[in-house]
Length: 425
Image (tube, rainbow, N blue to C red):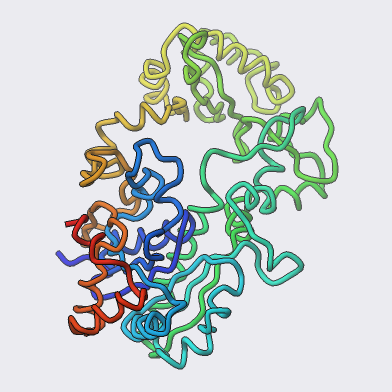
């Protein structure tokens, strides 16, 4: 079976996380991703947060699978010529530079269109057009400016950022969708187009239920939030702790071993349809005949007591035992799984969601695999490239340069030395 994006060539000018997330997804689906890096330096994340000396960091390797690396210095005349040839030969250019970086290099969108009218030029930016469009943005800045932080945490505490990289990786996911949509459009129009994803926009898209609640707030208190009915609401959507955002009361409760295990917790939702089974399971069958407890409306002002009783029961069992009891009763619940537990989960290994990759310098390591499964288009995870590993290969096979031309480019410093390629081999 062919991979879904076989035959698509990506000129990858991205670095750090948001852009590489996007291009790695495309590479997993079979696109030929040519990662352009500075000779001798490369993507900054190669050296960030290293756990082993002089070895590409896990930060880099886990964001750059299935790619080929070419080193290129576009400040040289021949480097710019090589870059033009890459634009001619690629279907998509992806970048997440600071605003205006490619324009300053002499490669505006208009110039890129002149070189290759069919190319799709895709960018991650911090903000869209407006007062902040020239500002730099990083993960936590995006979470704060996109609505996530103001609605995360407990009402009596500060705003919080989430451990999920919704600004960087989330925007990379959005950009990947934009790219494949533009590729589909090109099949009909024959022309490329600009694709832009702002990190603020991407975070706000993932916070859409909070924008929903902001509008509902104008018509009365938000009944599914823990501030109702005993607390107060201001003019903006408040932080709601661990409350469920779907209208069904839910909360994190402790399980057996919580005194020593920071993840001995489980999330339980008291869905009305499943409440009788839950009440019987925790030994509170009496609630079912008591009008003080047997309707959602009656329980709403007393949710702290409801979850207190649930927790009294959950603290006598471990989180997986609770899952085994509550799931057959159709009670929605989920254990708090640590990253360690997820790394060891056999089912995630079996589906390729967690994969073991062998790297020539660091040895074997775990990574997240492709989270999107297609029935007829396989994807696999291949190791990340060493810096400049495929420079000669790309120059010769993709751009059609001869050996003498490649050597001349090396002498000018347009591409990196051959030593890095030999080291990779």
